[in-house]
Image 1: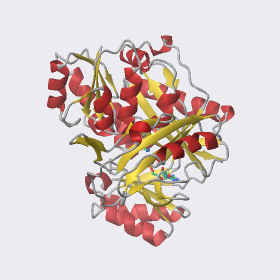
Image 2: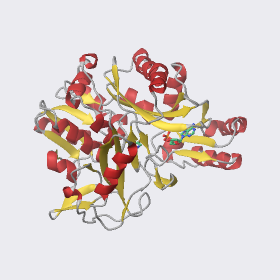
Image 3: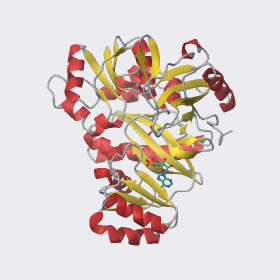
Image 4: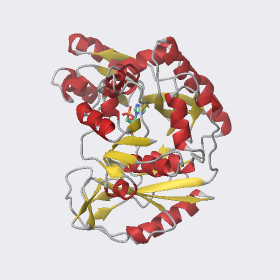
Length: 424
Ligand code: AMP
Ligand code: GLY
């Protein structure tokens, strides 16, 4: 079978590599892909949100399954587009339709969903410019810090956590009245601050049954000690040591089952990944957010730990036979560290020649923002490469990753040297 993977990051390289290990997979195509995917698949230079170009790619290459990496095509309705096209409707798309993608596309929708299905989450209310004064009043009922979330997609920047009430009121007004995040913040969710440790749990579902994938912890800030600006993610570890069997059982009972059942009750036929961002508050899970895709760089530690054939699982998602699929996870610890361009997440230069990564044998090298130019691999994005290693302990896995990183060079390369610092 030929498969098309949409996206261009480390997550998509990880999908491509894992799928390439399946003997049921024939040719792999990635749109648009990166220098890493080009080595094991055919890159197609189209945008994943250009649905007509995706259609043409699918028909020209006898593609029989589409795996969607990022959220934008899902929120824009790529799965619905396939279902309403006569030539595409029988091709399984791994990723929800527009109705399910709202779990990520609208924070307000996801809060209403959680409340309706009794899924533990922070107390909240939503406001627009028409009830701004009520928003101020609601803020006064909460304690600092104040959490303000733009309802819509804001490239990961739509959440503000503010220490003072005055600042929170000012920002709320900026968001709803002055469109601080454009249309995305015309509705704002204000919620209670949750004090705890964060982790992510990933679920693959065919709409009826589900598999719980390995948990992971992501390091989002650019600076060491988790300080500084937010990024897409600077590193990740799986499994998460504080996600004990007892805690994960609570997650399954209180969050995963009510989520999958809730989608079904609401008539949302969901086929794909659910990324559940959780806060462990005194041993109890509270949902911070849903994403309707895998995380990046979490995928770079979650997928290598899955021992089962990923294609087989996807096939189960497509034809709703996931319950029949066996599923096993490697108990070893996986760590990944992101190499980024100097300056990221603010402005940075591209086109830096990369060396040394081909010599690495003890780690998996996942390309993210890379491209090929005149026979060289050069940087083409902020997050450039994720280096994943296994170990019996976090320390051991990190040691391999950091010693592999020592072999890689490009001008202004930056990375965090303290991934896992809070877990060791
Ligand atoms: P989100 O985009 O919803 O993942 O939010 C970004 C980050 O803000 C999360 O990863 C958390 O670290 C933090 N955050 C979001 N909501 C809350 C909350 N209610 N309490 C504490 N931290 C939060
Ligand atoms: N690493 C966080 C995300 O993928 O949203």
